[in-house]
Length: 85
Image (cartoon, rainbow, N blue to C red; front, top):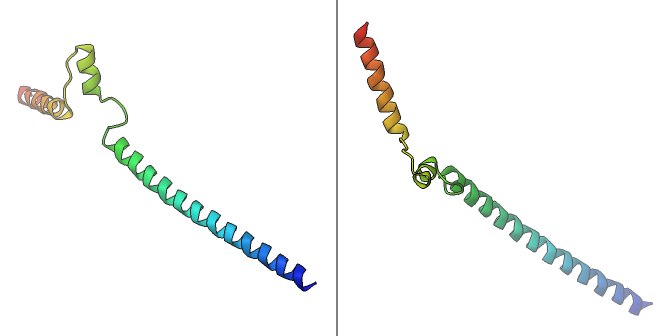
């Protein structure tokens, strides 16, 4: 009977050790996925995941205005309209 108890205890300890190793792997995987998520978001917000409109325009051989240039044109046109009044 003592032998059976010892065997059960040994088996339970092995299962706990296995559970601990799984827990450590899950924790490491969570950290890795969080870093990956942050990396993907950073690339998305910096425009590194898809072609920019400027790149598409260059590839298609057409002109492209930056937002700064477009805003300046709008300001100039608005100024001209106000002077006409």
